[in-house]
Length: 287
Image (tube, rainbow, N blue to C red; front, side, top):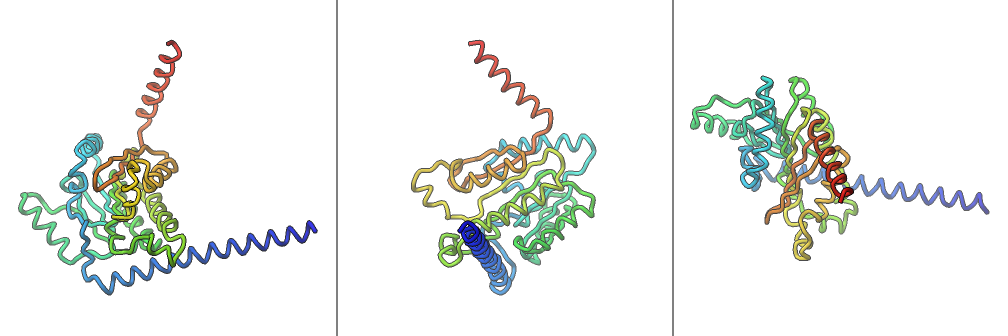
C-alpha cells in the first residue's frame, strides 16, 4: 500500500509539473504572438507614453532627480563618464547630464535620431552619444545582446529607467488574458524582473533604477477599494524584487502612479543607517 501511495504521489507531482510547464509555455507563445502583431500593425512603434528626453521621467520627481544629480556629481569628480540606460523606451540622457545613452525598444522610429540632432542644435549643444538597439523584451537573446553591447563598450551605467507600460500598453490587460491563458500575470512579471536583474549585474556601484508600472489601468480595482499605492500588488512585487537585489526602494504615490526608485546604497550609507538605528534602540532602552 505504501509503495502504491508513493507511486500515486509521484505521478500526481509529475502531472502537476507538466501542467505548470504547459501554462508557462502558453504565456511565452502569447508574448511572441503579441510581438508579431506589433511588427504588422505599428510601423514606427510610437507609444502614447513614450519619452524622447530622460528628464521627462522626472518632471514630477524633483527631489529624486536632485539625488541622482548629486550622485552624478560624484562620478564627474572622479572624471568618469555618466552612462544612462532606457529600457522599453527611446529617451536620451543629455538633459540629465549623461555622457552616453543606451536605449532598448521594440523598434526605433527612423526619425528618432534626427529629432535628437535637431534638439541639440536648437540648444547649442553637440550631438549626444546615443545608441538605439531594437529587440523584444520577452526575448532573452535580444536583451542579452543589448547588455553585451554595453559591456563591449566597457561602460557601467549609473542610472536605468524602466517603463514596461510603454512596451505593454497595446497589450490587453492581464485580467482579460488570464481568462484563456492562466499564469499570464505571474510569468510576465517574472520575465520583466529577470530583465531587471540582468541589467543590474552590469551597473556602476551605488546605482539608481527608476521603474514605472507595466499596465496602465490594471489596478483600477485596488484604486476603487482605496488600497494605498504602496500596498498595491505591483508595489508588493517591486518590494520583493528590491529585497532580492539587496537595494532600497522609494515609492512615490501620484494619481498616475505609483512610481519607484531603487538604489543600491554605498557602504557609508549602510553603516550610517545602522548607527542611526542602534542609537534609536539605545535611546529607547534608556527611557
